[in-house]
Length: 392
Image 1 (cartoon, helix red, strand yellow):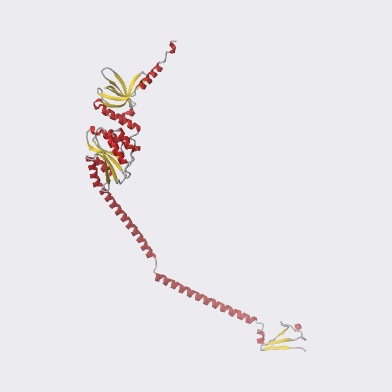
Image 2: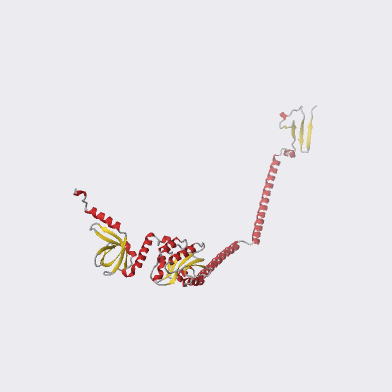
């Protein structure tokens, strides 16, 4: 019967762990720090106590980057974190997220907690940062219209980049609801289409004056804005939530203007150098082309010389052709004489010159008497004429 309610130790401790961790969310605990040690893993372990109780605490390595306070034994701190049960020893341990000296107060702790929350959400990630244009033309400024910030920005812009236009969206920069005023002024500025960047800031002030720039709502409005936002809150050491959420963060409004506006004098010098270099390049190119034309001109012959050379070449060709023609005519005459002599030698009438006669009968030369038909007509050709012999 008893076995029905008996559970292993591990099951009991596991139920205890679920009960403790489920019952408590994040807690903030104040106490004196003792038994401080840092393990080989990089985790920090300590005990937080008061006059009546104590609790073991752990600050893991990955949380230490969010905690810049120096931990000293016997000093009071506020530890913000979640409770956990270490099952092997059934120990309740406070897993710390933030540790701040007690003297800094709850406001500082809340601010650090808010920074951690927004950081974990990715509000401060680089992916939300927007680039400034190289040559901004229209700049929006969210600040007090009576403060020094707007005058400092205008002064720097007129000196560095006179063509720039400055548009003020006035807002209160301190007070209980100043963060809401800043958000409205930012939203009004975001609706202007040709704004290149927006500066949010003020001149110097006390730590309390920075409260409106540590607003969670303002941080979310900044990353929602389509334009790059520059945080320009005049302060020395404290980093505001606006500084972390903005695309750029500078220490003063003057520094913001110097960041945004290029130095006109430097731009003019760069332009002059660019024009000078371009002029040298063009002159070099022209000189190169002129040298090429000069070389081409020098390589061309004088037209009179070309005509003279052509005339002499033609004259020579004509002389050669005349000589060749004469040679051909001479050879032709020589060949003709030879043919003429050969014809004369082979002429059948040549024997007539020596006293012979040619007997022809029926258009045939009669070379033998036996071929002569004495009863028929025939003719006898002499050198000086022809005789026909007719038979009756």
